[in-house]
Image (cartoon, rainbow, N blue to C red; front, top):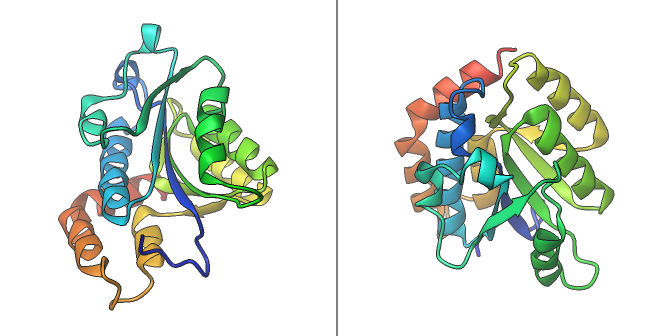
Length: 204
C-alpha cells in the first residue's frame, strides 16, 4: 500500500448510509454519490479497506447501486444498523482486526447526514483515538444549513475537514510514488465533478 505514512497511517474508508431512499431528500445527494465513487476507486488503487453501512435498510433501502457496484468482493459493505454512529459491534469487530494492539486508524468519511450519523461516527472515532478526515465534498444533509454547523463543530472537536482531491494527493505524497499515475488519472477523470462538488458544498 502506497500511503504517506508520516501523516496518514492505517487508512480506512467509511461510507455512511448512502442509500436509495435518501436520493430525493438529501441536498445535492448526487455529489455525495460521485465523491463516494471516487473514493472507492481510489481506495481500490491504494489497497485501502472500505466499510459501508446502511441505516435501517428494510425501510430506507440498500447502498445506492452506483456505489455498491464498485465495492470490492469481501468488503464489509452490508453492515446494517439502527444506531446513528457507524461504530456498531459488527463494524467494531472488523476494525479491531485492522488496528492490532494499540495502533490507531486514519478514517476517511463520506456520506450522510452530516449533522447526525457523520457527526456521531466522527465523535466516536475521535474518542477512540483515531484520526478522522471528513471530506467536505462528500457529506451532506437534508437541510443544507446543517452542514457548516456540523463541519465547524467537528473541526473544533479535532477532525480534519478536507477535500477528496487534497486527501488523495496527501496519500500519494510524491510524484515518484508507484500509484501516482493511477491516482492522478482518477483525479483528472473526476475533475469536473469534483470542481462542482467543492464549489457547491464549500461555499456555505
